[in-house]
Structures are given as structure tokens and as C-alpha cells.
Amino acid sequence: MTARMLPSTGLLRRVRQPSAPIPHRPDDDGLLDRFGRRAVDLRVSLTERCNLRCTYCMPEQGLPVIPNESLMTAEEIERLVRLGAAHLGIRKVRFTGGEPLLRRDLADVIARTAALGVEVSLTTNAIGLAARAADLRAAGLDRINVSLDTVDPDVFAEVTRRPFLDRVLDGIAAADDAGLGVKINAVLLRGVNDHLAPDLLAWCLDRGHELRFIEQMPLDPGHAWDGDDMVTAAETRALLGDRFVLTPHDAPRDGAPAERFRVAARSTGDELGTVGVIASVTESFCADCTRTRLTAEGHVRSCLFSDDESDLLGPMRAGASDTDVLDLWRRAMWAKPRDHGDDADGMVHPSRGMSAIGG
Ligand code: SAM
Ligand code: SF4
Image (cartoon, rainbow, N blue to C red; front, side, top):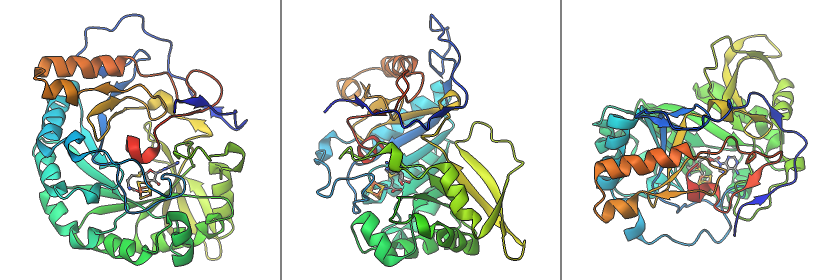
């Protein structure tokens, strides 16, 4: 399958475009692209496998398995992060997948990464986290984001195709007890869990977890995404408005994808906390993108929505020097597309889904 253009949703509001292309790569050590952006934030996928089958992310039968020998080892990840931190300006590393907790060597991967002096975070579905949160914290994990689209067990089973809500909730509680800062990510699906958005927010506010709603992106491998059916950020704010008053947060956004709001109870006016809404489809924030990604097989992917990948692991295993690997990574970044509409008006549905790229 190749990337294909999706019909324009008619919703896309381009907030700020990256600047005009720079004709030649300046003599600069960092991960610079043609539009003047610099990547400092690395996402590393540890596996494409997952124990859930969220309908917006994974096909029911799962994805073709990547053989273990094709995945980056802990040592290879450490080498790439060391190069990124020492020479390219990488400051933060987030491990993701697939489900990163399925890697038995996750604590080792985290310990090696934390020892390099970068901030380490994890995006996870939290299944199995109850038994491992304290160890991961001790290994150097700073923060986690847990995906939780609803706290209704039946709706959870419908969205994820698995009846595992209790395990997720146990994982979140253990992470909190271990002192990990917990944020919750949720995707709303029309007619499935959108009506439960206020309940999810109330649940998160009660426990002090910041919740961020993310617009559903065309990253499902089944290509069933329909822009006209997507619950937009504006609709999400309206859904929450029945029970809560949202006031834009005064803290500067600093290029962060989430627009943050202070939340007060509509009935009493009591301040309850904050919520974020990420308009990943309807408001392009490509101009402020600071990300570079490594797939589980060690390919640099500079944009979620571009199928261009540059293999670093193959050359590394064939004996490439640090200088060669750095050069490949810089060249991949220089080729990063301007935005996720592939420079046209409409979003591109990449051939690999979110779980394969690393969300
Ligand atoms: N399994 C882990 C988890 O669920 O947190 C990590 C990988 S998952 C691909 C990372 C994030 O991507 C999750 O927060 C998930 O909700 C989000 N995601 C997956 N598919 C998406 C889509 N089509 N649109 C928006 N977000 C998506
Ligand atoms: Fe698995 Fe995360 Fe994708 Fe859900 S969103 S199927 S938990 S990788």
C-alpha cells in the first residue's frame, strides 16, 4: 500500500505555515530541516505489537509481526540516543509503539537512556504497568502518558476490542503511587465514546491527571478514517461545555500541540484543574514541530504523515561509523516535508498505521 490523498475535510485551518524553504543546508550540527525547524524531541517506537486493538489504530487481526532480530536492541537504541543527545541537540526521548510495555527489556532501555542525561517519558496503554511502574521509575522514567478513551468498561471493550479496563486503571494507579507524572490521552469517536467525554474529564480531574483529547488522525491501517465524521477539537470543547466552563490557559503555548484550558464546574464555579485539546487535524501545528522519530526497526521518520523513512539500523549493523550515522540522520531530517498535508490541501493517509510508526 502506498500513501494516498484523502479528500479534504474542509475543516483544515492552517494556523501558521513553516517558513519558505532554505535552499542549502547551513553548516549546522543539529537536526535542521529545509523550513528552519530544528528537532530536539525524539520518539522511539520499541515494537509494533500491542495487546489492544483500538479501532482507530490497529486492525482486528493485529499487524504483520516484525521478527525480533529486526528490532533495535537496547544497545542500539542507546547508541542512537547517545549520538542524538551528544551531537544533534536531542533533549527529550519518548518511548512508544505499539505497546512499549511488551518489551521485556524496557527498564534496561530506560536506564540506558536516562544515563545519557535526557528526559525520558513513555506512552503506554498501561496494561501490565501495575507490576512494573516502580521499577521503571527507579530506572529513570520521568513521565508517562496513558491512553484511556473512556472509563466505561463496555465502551472501553468496544473501542479497544479487549475487556481490559481494570488492568489499565490498576496500571494508572500504580504509576501515580510510584511518583510518575501521569497524563491521559483520549481519542473521541462519534457515537461511541464522545458522549462520555465529560465523565472521562471528571474522572481525570478527581485524580489530578491532566487529560488531553486528540483529534482522530488518518492513521488507522484499515483506512476507515472519515474526516467528516471526526470529532473536532471545537466539538470536544462544546461537549465538555455542558458540565464545565473552559477558559484558555494563560501559560504560553510554546509550540506545544495541546491548547490548554482551565476547567471550572459549571454548577458551582469551582476551579477543578486543566484539560488539553490537540487539534491534530483541524489546526496544523506543523510550523512548530520539533520531532524526529525512530521506528522499531531503526528507521528515521521525520513526519508521521510522510512515508519517507531512512534506515539507520542497517548501516549501523553493517559497521557505519558514528559520523556516517549522524550524516544519515541529518539528511533524513533535511528532507522533512513542510506539513502533513504533503504540501497540498488535504491530509495524506500514510501506508503504515500509528502503531507501526510509533505514536
Ligand atoms: N500503545 C501505546 C498507547 O496506546 O498509548 C503507545 C502507542 S499509541 C500508537 C500512541 C498514541 O497514539 C495513543 O495515545 C493513541 O491514542 C494515539 N493514536 C493512535 N492512533 C491514532 C489516531 N488514528 N489518531 C489519533 N491518535 C491516535
Ligand atoms: Fe495499541 Fe496504543 Fe494502538 Fe491502542 S493506540 S492499539 S493501545 S498501540
